[in-house]
Image 1 (cartoon, each protein chain N blue to C red):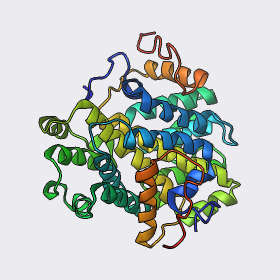
Image 2 (image 1 turned 180 degrees about the horizontal axis):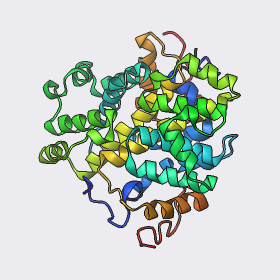
Image 3 (image 1 turned 90 degrees about the horizontal axis):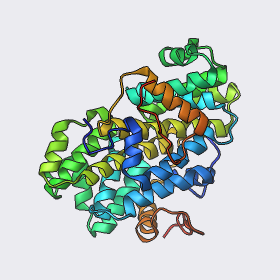
Length: 188
Length: 188
């Protein structure tokens, strides 16, 4: 049961973004720019940062949603699982490994990012902008995870829900739209 | 030294918001709505939430900035110090104490907010909206603190800098404007 009355048809973050639409709009816009805007990181790579931060914060809703979005973008389900359990042996580029290490540090505290982590990322070809965006995406999901769990929003147990949500996130992105969540809570 | 090249005239968050203005805009808008928009919580109470979360995250820049803003709004410097060291004995209302307890929990993890904390806040007269906004302000400063420290932005050591910044935040709010930071880094 959420701590405040939310639309029962809209679990997790969706009900919170519906509860206060004026605060939801800039949150959605920031997410759209960072996760779908122009970037030298692929959409899958950026969703991966969102999912490992959410996993580190044990936010089940956000982890499931952004893992499903990563899987849909990659067309396979193994990479997203591997980065969550062991970044260094996961099948991503050296640059991506070092960015995920930075994101994992930010998840705990901004102070946990070390000059060595940054040097390694730069040696592996990461640009200043990629480092900036990695830190800001990790910081944004530190917001989302706290928003979702701090108000005890509902976490649907069925993975089909997250597949439907991921489909919306991959097809339509993060900005608000009419009937955005049509059919989201309907069983397949 | 910041991990990425930032305008040296703009320390802390100010240089980061200048580095990528497209992502800065929704961050600023969200902050303006939450900290300066219509609310049954005073601006000082909302700045206080920002400062205790930043203090918990040991983000020196954000703590100093929002403590100075709280002090300026209250016209005294004692309350902001007391809420950071012991919420329960600080000179704020019972409602505010229970909201600050929730914010402190969110700072660590959304999962740390308990039904008992929410019950207590409601018994002390907190509305659903006040609880929502407390959680979201605490989540937003969890973003800010990680952004500021994760990229090692500069933390000016002199308290006069934060007085000048607080003056801008109290007088002009958080939205972007021409010459927003004029004179910020100039010594008094």
